[in-house]
Length: 127
Image 1 (spheres, helix red, strand yellow):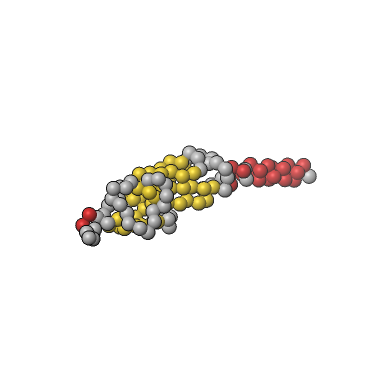
Image 2 (cartoon, one colour):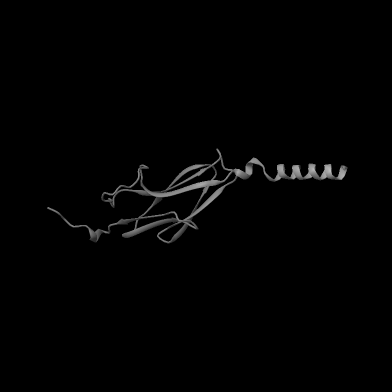
């Protein structure tokens, strides 16, 4: 009888140890977008080569804070970069567009965004 009681106590103890509250803390949503340097989303209008632009990466969680650092690997036009989050929120990283299609993507995810940046030869003078 004592053996069964000890077995039950051990099983219950293991359940509590293995199912701590910290196990639920995880990044559940990531977002990556191109933005203007002032933080606004880039609209459908013309992009001005004189303006500054950035990549904005946001992470959200089902808890109020991160348990540990979260490293997000992403590419800009095929070049690999990473950004480290020590807390939930948004990071803005300056970017230089190339003439043509620019693509940002979070590695190992479906998160991707592209936009067309005209090169100098793509403009035409209208009088």
